[in-house]
Amino acid sequence: MMLSSSLKKLFVYYSTMLVILLCAANVGTVGLALEQEEQDFCNRLLDVRITGDKLSLYADQAPLQSILQRMADLGIKIRIDPRLNPKISASFKDRDIQEGLDSILKSFSYVMIWGSIEGPPGPIVKLAEIQVFRPGNKELMKPLVARSGLAIARNPGDGSLFVKDEILLRLMPGMTLLEFKRLLRQIRGRVVVRNADMGIYKIRLSENSDVTSLLKQIRKHPGIAKAEPNYAYPISTPFKISTPNIFTFDSYNIPKPQGAAPVAILDTGLAPDSDLKDFVLASLDALNPDEFISDPFGHGTQMALIAAGVVKPCGIKTDSETQIPIIPIRVFDDNGFTSNFNIMESIDFALNNGARVMSLSWGSETRSAFLENALDYASSKNVIIVAAAGNKPTGKPVYPAAYSSVIGVSALEPGGKAWENSNYGSFVMLYAPGFATLPVGYKGDPGAYAGTSISTAFVANSIANYLSRNPEATNQEVFNALAKKFGKYSATN
Image (spheres, rainbow, N blue to C red):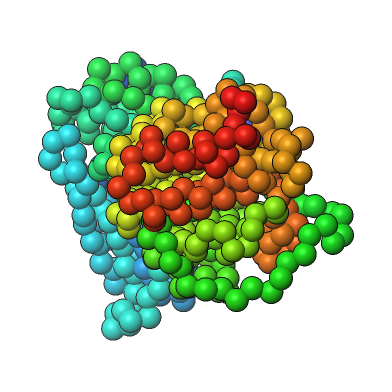
């Protein structure tokens, strides 16, 4: 009996070692360290990867919809009968997608819809949608509920935030489709989407990838012009003025907009009950384009009211200027984060819907060449961009306010002097009124608020008013008009 027990222990030991060796053996030698990634694949309870037209899956009693949610994270639209969610156990690598889906969806009917993304040159064919249903019950399918927020990671080196397991790439002219596909296989990446105007690809990597190390390798590839993390930014938190009755807010009867130069507001969205429906020229939820725009924070609605001219900052005559049409765009998720690619897609939407001004009441100290290029592109299309300098008086540049194509705005107190919490520096072009009483709160009750966010939205409204009266005005003429209006507050004085 002792011999039998020992043999059993040896068998278990060597079996375990064999599994580990098999997991470690499938390592590509392409100049990128994949050993840890392969080991992780063996250790996780659920791992889903798609590279090209190959599917890898490890699932140990994982709900079907959890598996499909991982596929949705890779940019595949999922529609499924919500009642279908059996536990799935499977383990395979680099299997043809249809063959892999057959093995886990054998009890149901399913449809795969393929699409393509323009490649360098030629199309990259990709799986665009999976539909799962019981035979004869296709009408019961619903879109799989999207995740509530971006997965955010922090670079321990410089403190910058980025979307976990995502990178952005721009290719060199002459990079072939074959070379690009080979690179994607090497980094185990999948093209999720391409921004045509910027020529930037969003690539989804394997779960828990070391983005910082991987980018160091990718940047050495002769076919890569630029590679960055998909940088992320938090929404700016406004200051609530706690002193009671510092301002009063008259009940407002909102007139219809008269201006002709729309302002795009890239922020936390717009509340459905904001009473601004007559002002909205177009709207977008950049994270969930199929959904109606909403605002879980209230910040975007606050900025929309100011940019539209419905609410005036303290000290501004209520009858000054006219009301302006707006293009509210929700770029921040439920946790208050946005990403470079969401911003780029929002810029495209704003341009396609006729925006003349763009209001960005947020920022961070992270500088991104891709975001700078995107804003330069918008500026080249005669869009004037304003952004908040920040509510911390550090003197450090805050982006996007500090980009050359953007007007950086700081805040004034009601008495006309610079607000003590407003950031400053050579990148600040204007100081504008930054206190307002708002009928919508930031994650709370209505009341009096302060911040460079308010100043930014007000400057955007002022620019739109000028352009509505002077539609052929050049950017320089707009800057001259701003200097005349806000000159005594300018950073150069």
